[in-house]
Length: 437
Ligand code: CMC
Image (cartoon, rainbow, N blue to C red; front, side, top):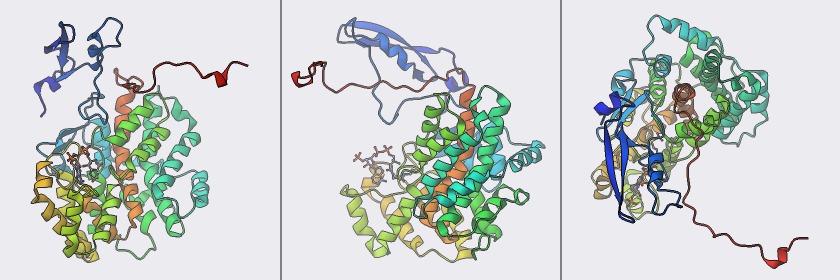
């Protein structure tokens, strides 16, 4: 829930009185924004020489790593807002570049939209080395690995990006990433498919150029307005999701003052995993393995036995429907009207129906997430499954850049350096076999 405390950021509102039963000591910990400062826990020591209390939170289940004004989620109510605007209002009504501007600047672009589109178009070309490197990559390499490698390489092409102190430099390199990641994605795809590259034509607009570079001459239904609008909507839905795994990776790398290209490349690594952005690919693999509606009960039984997960279900934050998933599901009708129904849709619908009625999923509050249906849409458009996460990465680049720009001027910016609870050997001496020479 958004609380009044979130509005009065930084103002101490209350204290937590903590009694340490190990020695009877009492500690007052400042509460602000419904949080305590974890560093204050260090004051709580069982003995004077102990390192003080730490919070143990692998996976950051209840640890706020930053303040952020970009995206708000209320997982219990299934709410997602970009800069205050509900995702249900944004999807289908705002273009991806409008959303990117909103995420970065806090407001929708008015007359600035034209200038923003032009500034992205002006850097929507790739250096020659990118073409050379992609062509040398084996066709068998997973597109996410190639994408992340090439994005890291751009940091070497634009070394001035390391000068993060200048707002103009940060802006230029943020714009370059938003403009160039889709171009790289398209080259990666075409190389993967053994297709000739298509040159960037920024006059087609951000999404038009991306779609053209991906699919031109490829005999697909991509040029249909409903397909264009489905891709635009998927980009908008995936544009940001506050402190998810990949954004946290980005912040971790950027916290060491690394350049934005290698920070985004690292974030892509996090995104590629099947528990995060790689879930869309994993869902399709799962649906193909199940194959038909009559095999759904057997599959669900295996999930409940703990043999495998129902991919595209569950979320760390949403304990209700993922609002993005609801929108993707609604958009499938329009896409399938153009492409023909994906036969796996029936399997997906039956899986969803069975899971939502099953105590295992109900008690754990497991609902379909954004990636349960997105893979079906991408497959219908003609994309191979290993490209799905690349589509996610193109979209999320806008969110990553918004977070990177916010983080670079955050007065709380600090190198990420968690503590550990040491479980290894106590100090000991090397055995006599390793006596000094
Ligand atoms: N299928 C079966 N059981 C599940 C699933 C699932 N998809 N997700 C969670 N559970 C169970 C889990 O086994 C555990 O049960 P128990 O309490 O008996 O041990 C309980 O639910 C809590 O799960 P958890 O692993 O502690 O939850 P988490 O918050 O750490 O994990 C998640 C979140 C997204 C990694 C997980 O739900 C999952 O693996 N889902 C499938 C992968 C997926 O679809 N990921 C995409 C997320 S949306 C795209 C994005 O933005 O990243």
